[in-house]
Length: 338
Image (tube, rainbow, N blue to C red; front, side):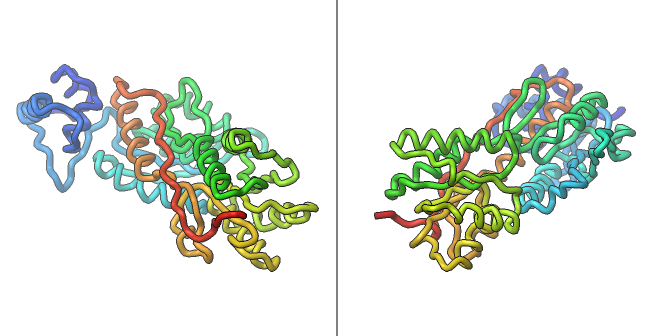
């Protein structure tokens, strides 16, 4: 027969497309009766799943495009490199073909999209982080399903998978306070939404812990170790130094760490450092970074599941899926303050 679709199988079985996806990928989450009903339909229609090449047969294309900003070079961000590496096997499990493509937002405001998008030769799109508004509008116009992974603020009408970074910031700051730190600085990634969320958690922990908020110790930096090095230099010119600094990302913390050590101070004896992400590099700097773990595996899994659900044409999953932040990976960059 003609190509099967998740939607068609779901209609025959009287279940949601996401339930069909669970059966096709041999995952837990449906009853044995439902699983057997779907398998019976697959047998009757002549489709026999192959464990070595299981494919979900989408309505238009089984390509999933991981769309990146050519100018921002998202794959230069270690967090996104690691997240991307986890998206690829999740695409494979769903029987989809991951394709990398780049968009460009020109100074004029014009959006340049790759041919795989303009020709609609893709079934769905994954963004790593929220793209600029003009890019979102152009993608919406194409009517191609898309999901924003690791957005900092979910928006109505836009499917997204996200982590509550406000809670991660609160957790990290509260941990410093529990160790006796009262004077705590903030070094954040200079994205307005990200700063708003992480500052909310940071300030909330200070308030709940009875600690003063010091604006002179609050700085922002691009997500780069070299640039955060320079930002830390400015912070260290304050008349009085904090006993600890909360950084909103490991790359920022690494640049901060480099400056503090080169300035002749010790970490954690003079200044403790804590951050968010738990990228691989955080385990190999000296001292090793204490950091709040972000579950990239779950971000990848939920993102592909949500996109496949949107691609089915009959969405059944929530529009926004939150992946809770993980535990604090306690290492060497933090100590008690007496």
